[in-house]
Image (cartoon, rainbow, N blue to C red; front, side, top):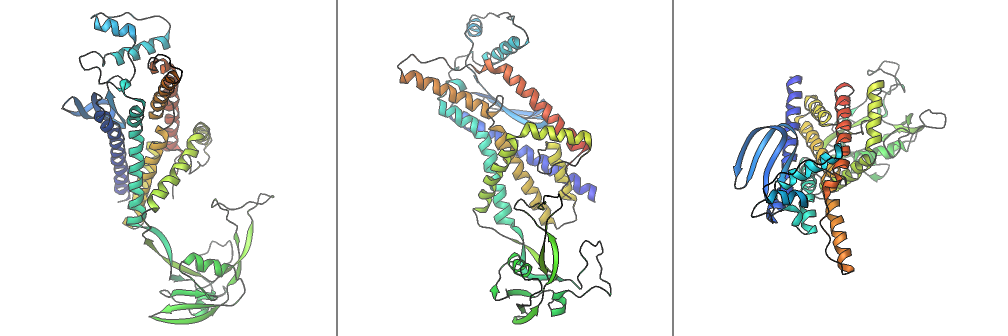
Length: 447
């Protein structure tokens, strides 16, 4: 059953990724068509075409490798004059010399120019006003952000967040020695204060030491602050309130910092503090959050992912080092789609309530869409952010010319950036390969 659940989790993530890609490309497609740009293809995936259908002037379809997608817009770049004149005259121009990158530039121009010849070549992307080009290119990432907001809203407000309530789920029989690996009590272990005071599973904490409590965290804070000091605890049991006196035993625990990790002292050892302990565990239930909690979580994730992206080369390098040295990977480091699928499989195969597994998968898919949003905003071609940067630079040149009453400049020829684009693509492929290998042979594990 675990294997089946693992496969189901992976398939859910694959479908979720395909939906995310489809929405991303719709975010480009809709404004492009709205602004009159001729769109030749809308494809999900790369490689050989598995299925396609032409509706109007656009071919819609799926390709064999579901790791991306694209729409083919006419005139992504302005035409090169020499190629334009040759195409209109029905001639074929020869290849220019200049080496590898010069040939790449010419090939890019030739592929672009093929979409410009015709009676309706005014329906091209590069002729759009700057703001419309920006809207078209930002449409894809924004769709991923909106999808993530919807998923987080379902997770936070629909399913709810696991929260420890004030209802007691378990009461420890004894106090086990610190650092022990034992899980059962012996005759020599002292009784736990809660059990000694008569607290039972099902009791609801009303107040502690005169302070009303509405969450288990509030109750824990008060208990931890009173080691060795008797405190009054008001309970609700069977519809009536009862008062008991509990004396928390003094115990040591590691100091946890704001980042959720143990605080380490100057000698390298974890710092400890004396706190109170009574031996009760809470019932955990899912509590729906306000409607704004989902969008809040989405934008908090944007900030966290953006921080990772700014250090992406360094983090990928660290991942490569961990891969070859066998060290444990940073759980907050970058993942490939293979890693995301593997985590989805692990989540689906865990021995947990179905709702908890569904919630984890939704959160994972939402985080993946945040990553797609942030990654595509990087201002480098061939990413959407690179096309936005080109459009904005074109707008700056035109505004400068207008300000100084100069003739309108020629459109920015992004094909000149093909060598840079090639380097970026090679780096992205290299980093992707490292992450895939790491996710296969040194994976991040949630459990």
